Figure 1: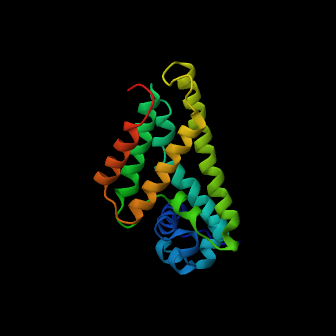
Figure 2: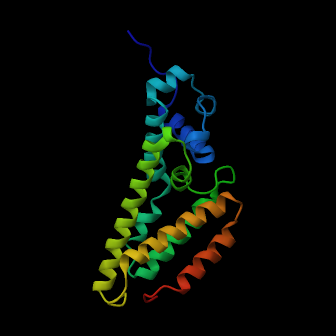
Figure 3: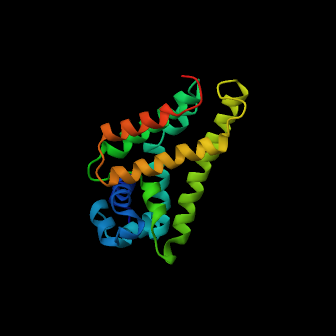
Length: 195
């Protein structure tokens, strides 16, 4: 008969999220992960699998717990308000925790060795899914007359996603919330849609 786990799996996964968020996929060692989770390596493997599987679970948890502002933003009544909510949500999240600034997904997709290509591809695919959802919302805004008929919705969505990536990097480099809010305001000043 196997022994029961003697730790809270949800708490351990939250700790794993924090490590990956602060150190990235490659930067997070098993020592970092086991220390943060308070679980020995065999227990961590038994609960979550190898490091890549653990990262994928952590990424899912991160999206569920921290990125709800993005799908909520897509429900805003105008495209400008959609983008405002996305950029302000990112500014708040990227600076909320001093020990893990920026975005786990953005920062994890930027740098890596050949061994991390599957993880990077997962992050790129997740970003692409978010961008596709934004394109669809902007297309709807154009059909509703909120955006001009000649608005290039794919380019506008790429612009927003580029701003999000840049804001994540700037937050990791020490930019504070006020700075990121000012960046968001500057980006919004060029938005072609109504208020």
